[in-house]
Amino acid sequence: MQASFQVITFISVVGLLGCGNVTQPQHSQNGQVAVRAVYGGIPGEGIAGFQLADHGVDAVFIGSGSITEERINWVQSQGARIYAEFNTLHRAEYLENHPDAAPIGTDGMPSPAPHGWQGICPSHPGYRAQRMLEFRKLLRNFPLDGVWLDYHHSHASWEREVPVMPDTCFCQRCLQQFTADTSIQLPETSQESAQLILSRHAPEWTRWRCDLLTDWVREFRSILDEERPEALLGTFHNPWSDEDFDGARIKKLAIDLKGQADYIDVFSPMPYHARFGHVGDLGWISEQTSWLGEHLGIEGSGDAETQIWPIVQLSDWGEEVAESEIPAIIDHGLRAPSTGVIVFAWGSLKKQPAKVEELWRTFRLLAEAK
Ligand SMILES: [Zn+2]
Image 1 (cartoon, rainbow, N blue to C red):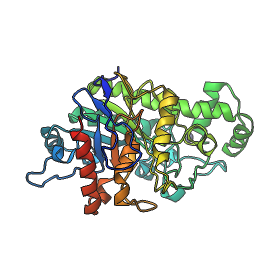
Image 2: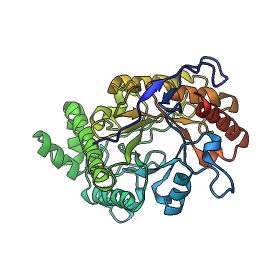
Image 3: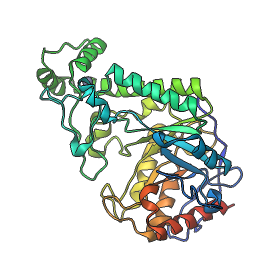
């Protein structure tokens, strides 16, 4: 079911990056670090003579809406891979013509979008069918190297130091499906049902919501296997452990990583240290990746079918990221069990040439390491 990876071996390159406290980046059999990717654009696109390999880049991620045959050809002709990012549960514009797809809160009313992050009810059949069709067309039409799911979580604003994660979705459709699947009987109104669920049936509700989102991943996998089985299926996801924020990744966001692991080739947690209140604590990046590896039983070596490639923050969001920190950020992003690193985000980063040069220097050193 899952695409195979090259056997990964470990080669010590302590001190390679010129920063203290460096551990061992992981290398494939040909001596290259597994993946050195840029997210949010294609560096050098349209610049004559620019070669991604000259800058140590071997993969790029761009939004599925900006994928074209020409862009794929340009990247792949340079020997690099191109992956599309695919928005699953946050296509807010769908609500304009389908107000019944709005997530319902504990008061029985549409839940206001926290910080403007508008989610969609995960049991809405029309919305799901539309997303699955778009996913299929993307894979059918374009020779992509893979697709990464994004925003695959409940209606919430979690990409910040203090997240806002309202309890949803208590629409009649979700409630009826919950009763059908669990045999738990509920009162007539959404408001009464929400009260009963959260006070008496929270574990069953959490399980049901997680399973629903996992079932989306199962269907994405089946479509990918039908349309382009050699492509990878990845996911950009919340980087919290089961304990962080009192288990909110599961209880609030409905992300069951173990459940999704049956279908996912590459997990890409998003430990944006500067955005999430960890300035000066770069170790937090590799701690989150380490937790994920233990949680999923991924060691980052051998010919494991499932890989971890975190996406790390180099652009300024929340707090600034200093140019001098870039080698250490990349290093933490590559510590075991990681077998690749993705850099966030080109759209902003490209306006900071000194940071770009430091990124290229770091990536080149990794690419050249034997
Ligand atoms: Zn619903």
